[in-house]
Amino acid sequence: MSQLVIDLPESLEQQIRAQGISQNQLRKVIAYLLELYLKVDKSAELFQSANSPMPRKAGSAKHLGICISDDFDEPLDDFAEYMP
Image 1 (cartoon, helix red, strand yellow):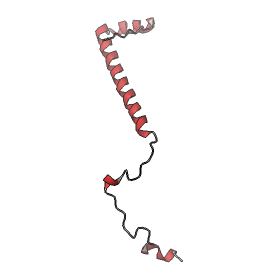
Image 2 (cartoon, rainbow, N blue to C red):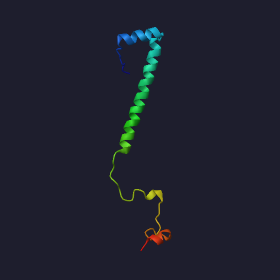
Image 3 (tube, rainbow, N blue to C red):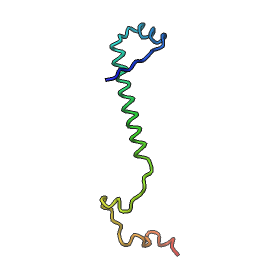
Image 4 (tube, rainbow, N blue to C red):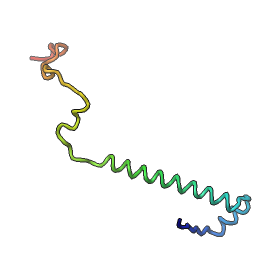
């Protein structure tokens, strides 16, 4: 397992010491934040690939069981008064 080394600015180190945060606590917080970041980054990558345009394939929705009735293109009685 590789080790990640993070150099903190001196002012930040002073703030951490002033708050009484131990190195172990800081390691746990950083590990947690990195884990969250990696999950978010990975899910964003999956979301982008899911939204990328893919070529359409004829018949790809056959499994959905959608049927269009034979009279689909016939004029509707509700709109008879608007038709010439």
